[in-house]
Amino acid sequence: MQGLGWLAAIIVGGLAGWIASSIMKADTGIILNVILGIVGAVVGNALLGLVGLNAQAGSWLAQGVAGLVGAVLLIWLYRAVAG
Image (cartoon, rainbow, N blue to C red; front, side, top):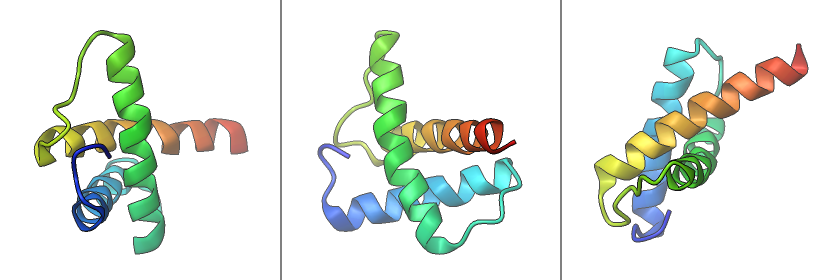
């Protein structure tokens, strides 16, 4: 998460991962929620960059939305691969 400090990245990642797990009805713990949110933000920002959109690096809200979209995608991909 570019532009956010480590503590902010953990907070935003945790919130994004928790919301994503709630949306996708996934039974994940707090640590996995944080990981999903942070990795999801990286994935979400990469996908947004491919379509020409850029989440503002310093914005908590933009990074949260990117993390949410990425985390939902990661949960969906995991379920598709795991069966």
